[in-house]
Image (cartoon, rainbow, N blue to C red):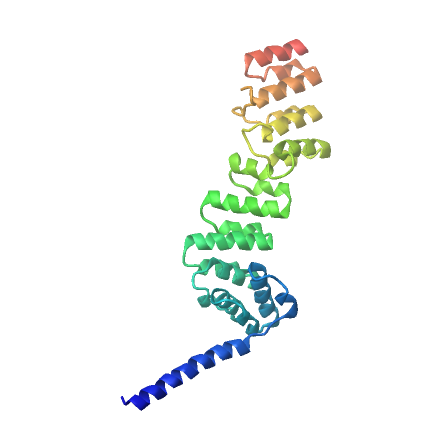
Length: 268
């Protein structure tokens, strides 16, 4: 190749590269309100949203390469542009309201991150059901329930002990407060959604309701292996209190613990 031809080719390459740079710059369309935002996540998100709403990828060219691809993926509805970024798959799932985009993430951890983000953004508990690992599924639901602000949804947490308890305790006064509200509302169904085998649990709630209604059948909902903090079974304590209120010694006969049973007889 002659020297002259080499120079021509070099100049042509420079013009091509310069031309591409200019094209990107010319394609960029700014928004005066968005430009007032400080550089960072908020500004990037605003331009992605603007590009999606206007269906105009020119707004994408204000972003860095990483965020540019995410923006173009959203406008074009093209997950292949995401380059394994969980945020990109989430944006597609969010804007098109199709959680199936999360499944296109190549890594399971990225998929889970996408499900978390999508569920939080849409306040949709059902998206968590796509997470196979039970503890992660419950953790996903717990965060979304916190966002929604409805503690009754804690009943959807599969782990009836630790994780459901943590879910309720996100709210003011936690489980204890839920028991008190059940009594005030005279709504026994609130008891059914509470965690088991902890202080102020479902069985404690049943005990309180049985005493409130003087109803032995509620006591019988309590399993025999459910204990309070002192090691007494909630069912025995419940039966004792209802027997005492009804002045009915036959109810005392149902108590297993001899000490509680004797106390029951002595009260009548």
